[in-house]
Image (cartoon, rainbow, N blue to C red):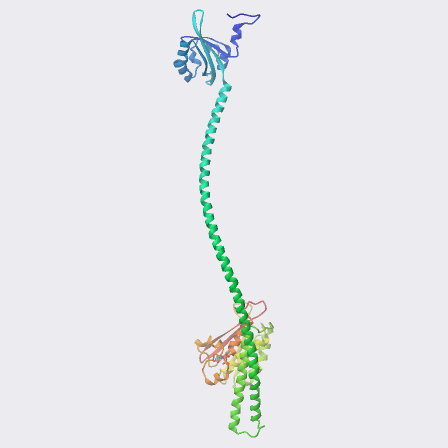
Length: 438
Ligand code: ADP
């Protein structure tokens, strides 16, 4: 039995109690709803009181109410702490905990319900559900990551195997390299030894040539000298036949002497011991110094020499060796050109390539067969065109001349037509900065 104490009004207290309160008859009509439940649902009292209680329920709650809640209430007279979703006027769902009891009020049966909002609990439930979903997702990801790791571990194992194989192969190669290196060291030691042997042999060859030339030149000079004395009648009168024989002796003696000198010359070039004193020289000067040396033969054979060297044209050469080459080429032209023949010496900057000078010596002589044009630059090669021409030479002049030309960064080549004449082209550098011919 409720009691009133002082100014307390139980009805007003129920109306604004901190929980929703609603009573409905068995036919579902709401008989009473306090302000708290109306506020919780955002509904006016008219919207609730006098209406069916299902009006404030969501569809799911309605089904639950009809199938479980109401039968339970009728059967047991109460229902405790049941979680329900109510429908607010806005359409939002309002989560509540319901406790209900059937009471008899003034001869009427009323189902009285108390609603506690469970917003926090729902929030926690949702958070829990989210956390659970998150955890499941993370677990799934973890499982996937784990699978990946396992796969990578397998791959790593495989690569490790490959690496070990490669390392073994590398080690083998390294061993091979070490062996090859040892071989190389051995070979280079052998090479050094052979080079030393070759150098020794070369030194011996030079010493031998020097000794031989001395040993041969001394008696040859003596032969020449005594032959001349005999010819002059110092040792008594000589007959015409004896004079003729003595002439042959001295001619052979001069030939032998020249041969020895040229062999010595070639040996020096080939051993690489020849020094070149390279300088700029006016070409005219060089040519003018050589011509007097061939003039007696030119005169004797009534040959004409035409010289055409532009004034101021200079060459970068060793003067002595250049004179030797020009003398040899002019000497050959004189030798292999018939009497009253023509010889021409001309020079000009080489066309096309910069920094080179070409000196041409041509004649109207016997010419050289095309298939011998290369061979004549080999030592001791002579073209047997006329026996007399052959006997006068040593076959070394052109070989020496080409070697000297190349030693100065130039070259020497021949063009010829048999029976018409020959042209020898000597190419030289026009300055220290000119590129060598090859
Ligand atoms: P050598 O003149 O002492 O025989 P070279 O080496 O100077 O030796 O010449 C080799 C050969 O080349 C000569 O024997 C000759 O057959 C040929 N030769 C050289 N120059 C001429 C030339 N101007 N005309 C024809 N033949 C030549």
